[in-house]
Length: 78
Image 1 (cartoon, one colour):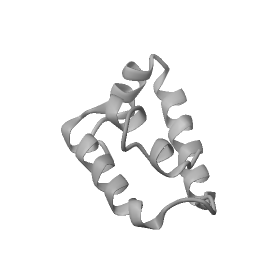
Image 2: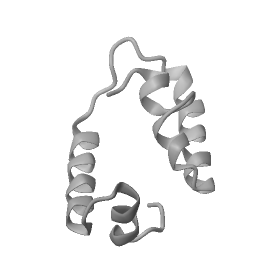
Image 3: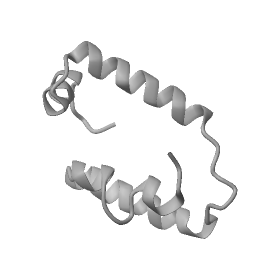
């Protein structure tokens, strides 16, 4: 998704490549099973997606995780 190898991701996370793969696998399973909270605002979803994609495109990893416009902060997902 980010055009980075698990070795590169592992270095960023200060984990082993195996641990990075496991974290990605757990995250994918969790996302597949996630349902939006009942108090989320569907009108905000396109804005959240665009902010996420912009951060991903620009390599702004901090922007993907923290700050205004991230998925958890904007919609309350966690």
